[in-house]
Picture 1 (spheres, rainbow, N blue to C red):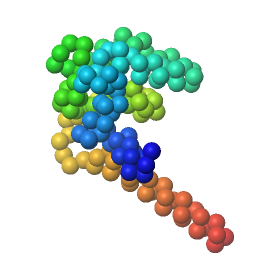
Picture 2 (picture 1 turned 120 degrees about the vertical axis):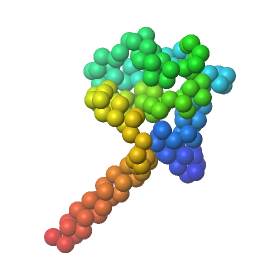
Picture 3 (picture 1 turned 180 degrees about the vertical axis):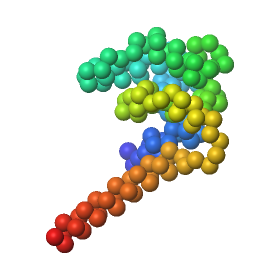
Picture 4 (picture 1 turned 90 degrees about the vertical axis):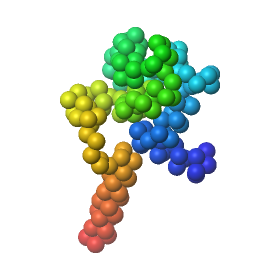
Length: 155
């Protein structure tokens, strides 16, 4: 993976609400390249998450139940098929992708207050993007580490 590829991956991972990120993850999930996410493809990626959860001692949600949640979340225009257009139209594509690719974020979404999620969806104000939040958190971590290192060297 080149540096440029890594940068695109990092941005796509940290800000799954961005249209470019939605396209990136769609291409990752569309294993057969037909432009549609089938239930088989969803199950394929969810099985990996289930293995990770079981290794952590967490009982995973049965795939059928998860599938119902994801279809309710995305509301695809065709039954049993999720298209890129469906995901771009859905305001919670980041939750959809985290379910299949990022266990830590998936578990965070599962533990979150559903009313807080609804508030996020309804909020149309100028809220920082996921990437902006990630960059700010990383900057704060860097400043704290440099401050601690400076204190260590002084003392």
